[in-house]
Length: 400
Image (cartoon, rainbow, N blue to C red; front, side, top):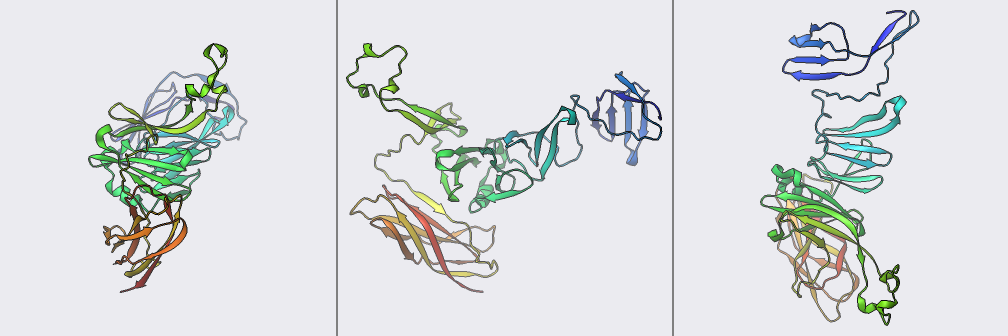
């Protein structure tokens, strides 16, 4: 009313019970029940509240007051409602991840409400509670409901690793999405995506510098991976490296690594469902036995997804390093084709490439294959290989 106004301590709660919405507030007025549209009733219950008196000049309008009091609010039916999966720092903000929403939190000071929350993305969020990893102070990677994303704040999402994510979502066990774990292996510029498949688990390794994908399948002997962490592991010198220094000659405040060279190694620790803690990459020795490694490219439609392409040749650019002299090693090349973007892949027979020497060398193979979408797969099961495919060309003819 003109000249005077009353402010109640903010203490507001909405309860949704079927078609009746109850509003509980810090008011001491008598109970009222209002019938709204579509038969929804709004009922206010009286509570004792603290009142502040003041005055407003005649003709002035009341304005919204900032509320620094603790409280909660539930937004019924909004897409950004739901459980909070993760809160991750990103620059000057904290990012709130939900299943179908991403929000940014910024500290704005007590006079402005302490924190300001803004919804950045709707209809996209984390597929599971642990499917996000922080690369640095301004960059996150998370597995959403449709893609693997590189996220740097705001409303822009960059899908990454699209050469494999369609396969990932096709084989992901949707009943076990909370087992999805993301890990940043910093020293190799890799993001690991551990995800469950029917009866097992698979690890997708995306190199974000070279944009390459590797798949790891671990033996079920150790169970599934339940946690991943990166730590700096001290490398202590051996006792025999102490030289002629006698034990009694070492001072009480001296450490042995001050007498010989030592250092630290950045390693990845893995926890398994069997209760074991494993150190990744410490033992590479397989007693000389080879194992198969493979790499796939993304699908290529050559700008014309409606026409068939008949593959005539594939030209590889191999970067061979530290090759053992007088040995010949084998790399296999396959062409995968699809008739539709979501269809199954038909692979050609593997064509061998015999590699000898070192350096960079172009190689041509003719694996064949026809389809609207074309991809390549490179594999090898030869021990002692140290090479990479640094480039490739697909030579194809357009059909009907």
